[in-house]
Structure formats: structure tokens, C-alpha cells
Image 1 (tube, rainbow, N blue to C red):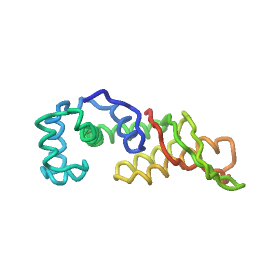
Image 2 (cartoon, helix red, strand yellow; image 1 turned 180 degrees about the horizontal axis):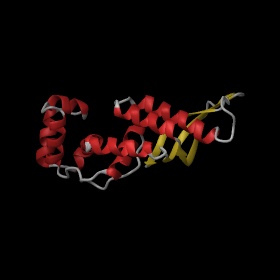
Image 3 (spheres, rainbow, N blue to C red; image 1 turned 120 degrees about the horizontal axis):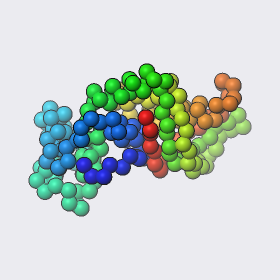
Image 4 (cartoon, one colour; image 1 turned 90 degrees about the vertical axis):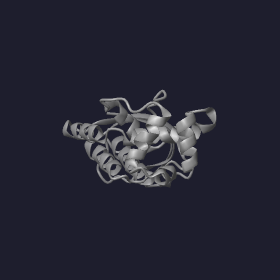
Amino acid sequence: MSTLSLSANTVQEALDRADARHWTRNPPRSPRARLAFLLRKSGGDHALLATRLQTTPQALKTFSSQGGDAENRALQQAVERDVIRLWQPRIRRHAHATILHNNGQMMVSFRAWLGFIAAAGSSDDPRLRTLTLSLHAPHVEALFSARHRGAPEPELLAILSHALSACYFHRNRPQGTAEKVRIERIDYLEFYF
């Protein structure tokens, strides 16, 4: 695999990349081996895999034979993301279960544009913030379960926004305070577990 960046700009990809720290074997490295792995996961259906990677079956054949030239950079990244998403699902679930069994703490580090909602009203102008904080067990469990069932990115973003509100803005305040945070756009995001 190319140099694996552990940060991402979506919650889905950041969770998948954090799971990579728990792998017991490396995923396939060559373009042909990666596509063979993804085809097995797609039941051998080239059209289904091409649709999932937002390309054509012909482009997949060319990629498999020619590998990763500069013209195929977008396809290289799509293949890499899909391999990371699908590699060692049992190891991933076992790691998640172990984390939840052992107090369920997760660190998150990110830079994102946040919108704020408070008793006085909301902020229409999202503010760029860089934060590193610890998420607590109920939020970690919600993220893991949503990811396991293939929840879409907006749902994962809403779960993370709720977790940030609870773990950062409400940590020394009583339950039911009105302040909330809404993640508008992520510049980078990294989970540590």
C-alpha cells in the first residue's frame, strides 16, 4: 500500500484508518492484487465494483494491468480507501469490542469548521477550530455501531457532532444545557484507539 495517511477528511475514512493500527496482516499492495481482493468482496461483479469506485469496468481493467500512473490517481485513492474499508473485518470488530469492554475511551484530533448553537441563538459563520479530546464510551459505541451497519457520512458526522458537544462543551456543566456544536466541514480528522 502507499504510505498510509492516518488522517482523513470524513468520519468514515478516519475510523477505517484508525482500524488499520489493529491489522494483523498487511493488505494487498499491487494494483492487481488490490482489485482481485475487491472483486472477491463484490462477488466477482466488475460492474458493481466499478459503480462503488465511481469508475467504469474498462478503467478497472486498465488500472489492473497498468497500475498506478499519475493519470489514475483518483482511482488509486478510491481503491486504497475501499481496501482499507474492507480489510480484516473480524479483527476490526474484535478491536472495537475490546475497546468498549475496557472503558470505551477514544481520542479524536481534528481541524474543522464548527457552527455553534447556544441559548442566545446560532452562529451562521462557522469557525475553524483545532481540537484534541477524549470521547466517552456511549459516543464511541454509537460511532462503532453506525460504522458497522454502513451508516452514511451525514449520520456519522451528526454522531460526532453530538459527541463533541457532550465531551467538550458540556463536560463541567449540568445535563440539558442548550449549547451544541455542528461540524460544518472537516479539514482533517484522526481517531486514536
